[in-house]
Image 1: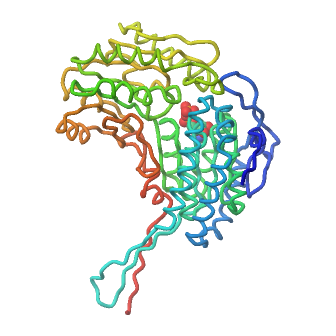
Image 2: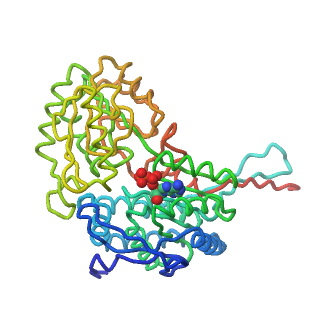
Image 3: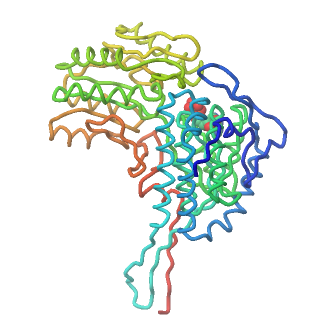
Length: 487
Ligand code: ADP
């Protein structure tokens, strides 16, 4: 305890396979840059299909012994891992801000959230119960066992470089599975830092393997994981088009698949709402991570009676609370977007809205580098791209509606169904709308809802399966019915 280390000593420049730091067989590497400054952080191995196959073999071998460990042993290692992450939380947060750009305080929040999955699944590991089923035949006894699936292949995104890994990997490890994980090319360092701490916690070699690759090799690494007969499970968080590719590729081996894909969250404010609370809720829901989360409010629907008041209060609060800057600067709430392509998309959404009649109340412009000014658009209509596509940036488009039916219809029109939010103080309306929203998560008078204890998963094209909660571990277990005869 009490070991202080420089954050840069957590910047590992090699991948992690079989408990060892390794290079790509080809010797190739790719560069990782800081999205805020454009400066080079370093280089990591650019691994390909061959390297991935090797990691799968290692994980498969490790599974043969890992599956025999007791739940208590696995729980102890996860808890120790959590302790080490807490001990080194400041260094982990700095690594995260350097590669991803989010403000340091937010990065620290993510590290705490990511670590909470270690604690949660340390507990859940010991609560994987089977069943004894009342028999319909006197001479038989019927049992259900839950057993780990095997090697789990994982692909994770850049917007939560720590928590998206722990939410998946800790569930798998708790269940007795082993892991081959490809982190996003923009943010490999948080993944590698987690490996070092896992190893210090006593996680045996081969249980958690991280294969780094550039965008150029992401498709072949993904395909290798999906097609391998040694991999029993694919878990992916990222864009809907890539999720569909992985689901298709997994068909050849009938893999179990979990997907957390894009959202298009409606945020509805009814006339009966506490407008101040709705504005405060939106600040976190919309501007966290500069709007780059799949549960961020994407379409803000405000009822006509409070529309003007809401827009004005939101503008004032944005002026007061949002500060664009480097994530390491004190007071910054809005870091950069992940890259210039992301900035182009956000600018495209704003330009499209303006060309169709929206009013720019605040912001609307790209700034130097990968930064975009926090933007408030009023008089937004359903025909504008920002009202039907996921913007993934700091833009709050406000649409006006008249009736509850109209708001629910607009909210549900999309093929996405991840998160939905609404503010109301009318109890019957709260029940009706909570039941009618076609989303896997609903925030009622609350703008940030994710916790390890509750299930996170999308409806419709937003995904398959749940992460976190008592359901999360089931994604890595399979049922076995055992019938004992002749009793
Ligand atoms: P984003 O737009 O947020 O980058 P992506 O879905 O493109 O979302 O990326 C999420 C993760 O999926 C990253 O780790 C990325 O490298 C990976 N990825 C991208 N394309 C593919 C692909 N064709 N097959 C497998 N993984 C991919």
